[in-house]
Length: 82
Image (tube, rainbow, N blue to C red; front, side, top):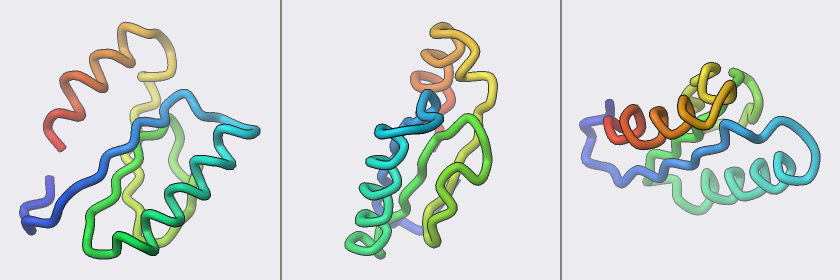
C-alpha cells in the first residue's frame, strides 16, 4: 500500500490475455505512465510480465481469472485495499 499521498489509478485487466484488448491496454497504460508521471498507476493482471512498462505496478491475482466469483472478490475486496 502506497502512503506517499499520490493519486492512484487502478486498472483491472485480469481477463486480458492476448489480441486486441491487450494491445489497447498496453497503449493506454503507456500513455498513462507518460502523461501521469506523478500518479501511481497499478494494473491488476493474472500473470506477471504481461505489460512490461516502466513506471507501472503490476498486481498479480492469478486466481481471479478462474471464475467470476473470484474476480468479484478480487475487485470488490482486495482492490479496495489499494
